[in-house]
Length: 304
Image (tube, rainbow, N blue to C red; front, side, top):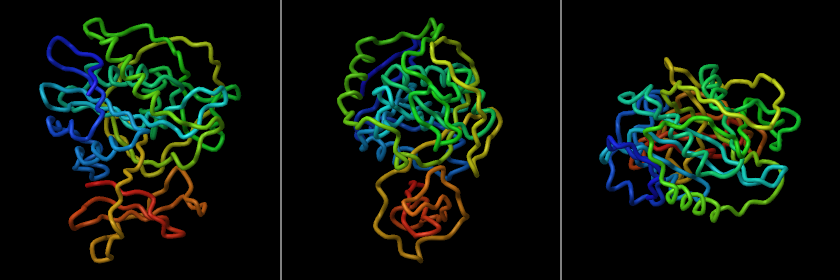
């Protein structure tokens, strides 16, 4: 665990490195991911993500309780200018501390830790307004990341300068530097365009609407992205996308799964199909299983 920042009131922010670090922590109360996706096992999913070198998970901790988190993932290839690309997949803050700037801090720390361009895909207009307020831009023809095949994504260029940081937040320069080195050491990408295999969609939220401003040389053209099918907005919650967990269980017996509904992905299966069948899984490894509607391939498994 690498501490990145803290407030004098005891709230701290750290990058988790190993699944066993979760054993010393508790999960706080979260609403969106649980209510709309049935992900009751936050710790199980955190543990799964931490096993993947491409994932960066930063958490806000009050005493020993996780009260906020942000997850980014490294895309498999670099941008056209050779720089790394990271996707802000998910950000969420406990309702108990919502609207206090915690979501903004989680985002800023994530952007500082992941040196490179950043992308995100808002799933509704409220989410889009939130990310635009943070400095994300709609990709234009000069964007170093080719997003022509990925409608709806917003782009934040490397080196974007933020004018403000909370005065009461104590940053750990050593911790941020260590985190940057740790993330860059895991990068072994190939230059070129982004890979569709890095795209999967599950909505989560951050109850955070505090705008921050910045300036950058990149000049983005104005286009209107499509919103994600099936994702819902609740109040002021801001939604983005999060990747699948890779620890899919052994083939699930038909008696242990129940069909819920069809779900459209934002990326194609290898067979070219977008639609999946969503199943609720019971038994020793409960959760939600998404299977391609065309070829029957398992797209991902979400622990419940």
